[in-house]
Image 1 (cartoon, rainbow, N blue to C red):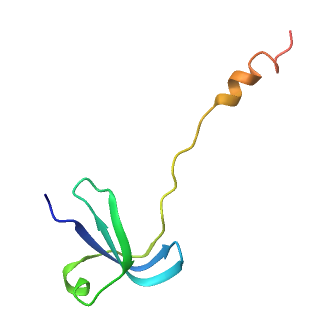
Image 2 (image 1 turned 60 degrees about the vertical axis):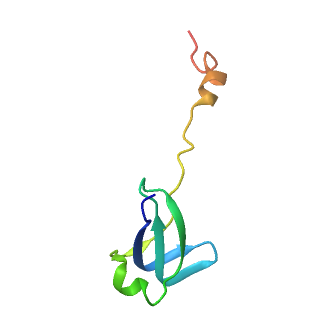
Length: 76
């Protein structure tokens, strides 16, 4: 198994609020494994990110309402 990728964010939004010096771990596929306060050994070994890190938003885009509206809005 491949070691996780360790990143260091100067500022990140975590579930409990904003935190400085945050360690982010990802697996080899790029999936988030964990995030939390950076430890002393992370400061030298982790890849440093620039800027603020916020969680991504899932894509919940869909159009089921269009099936309901079909034929209801156009008049001859």
